[in-house]
Image 1 (cartoon, rainbow, N blue to C red):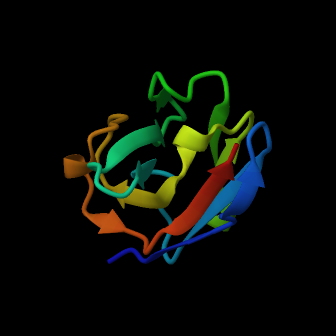
Image 2 (tube, helix red, strand yellow):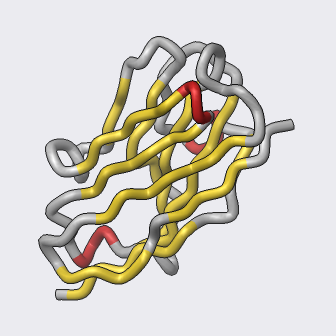
Length: 123
């Protein structure tokens, strides 16, 4: 069982930046794929970015060039650096983990989820 706790959300103006963190209760770096997802009111949860155990990454087209996913295996922590934020980035952001060896942005591939952190971007 892996517990995940997100932090770093908040309210910013368009063009601003935020850095989300996700602390894991167990070591996930060597064998887990880790991902960030978001869900806006009335919309389905969507994949934002993911990183596999080898460090390969994948991003949703809507965030490419603006968001960067990274991880610190020594700290069991996943990060999402979000720059040039837009109002359409407003959502609850979740981190997720699962012990598979490919990089995936499909939320159905993940079994371990955090409680989420809210990101609100105003115009």
